[in-house]
Image 1 (spheres, one colour):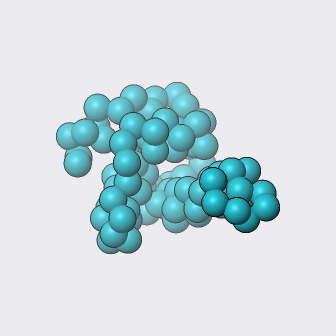
Image 2 (image 1 turned 90 degrees about the horizontal axis):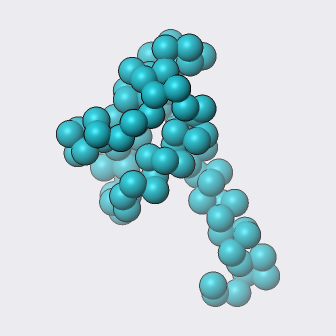
Image 3 (image 1 turned 60 degrees about the vertical axis):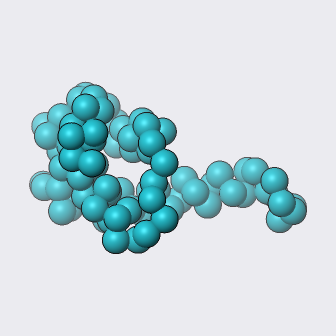
Length: 87
């Protein structure tokens, strides 16, 4: 997982765009603990490639990453299923 994430270029990219690039590269596992590890690795990689980020370290970036990912999922579900019928 670490080698795969290290291959993704997140340099000089905005936070949301970098997260979208990251999430489009593979399918997240279903287990929360594994997702947390992926998000922490994303945060480390993002901090490494973006020195002008407002985050002090990867730990400070990890929670906003999880929150933004959840917001993307909610937005996708709302857009896909506005009447709450199956897509």
